[in-house]
Length: 70
Image (cartoon, rainbow, N blue to C red; front, side, top):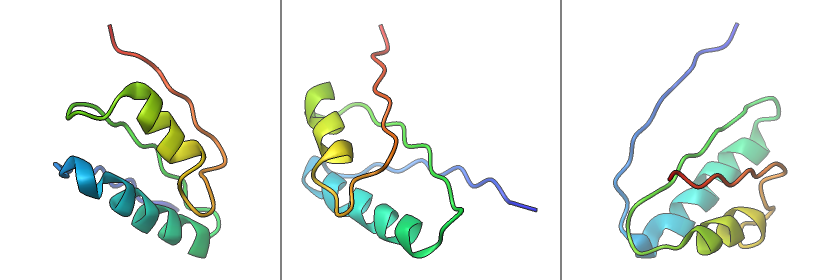
């Protein structure tokens, strides 16, 4: 059995990567946990968001899908 948790956060742009690393650390420490991250707003570009998720975390998230909301 699993529980779904939905968390909506308003994080200053300069703390987004730090928050994502915290989430990734939890994800790595607990195999079988799955996170879906939706990000938007602020001054961070789509390209920068994708780079954060794919390359700037240690380890990077294994699956990243970037979708632009028109």
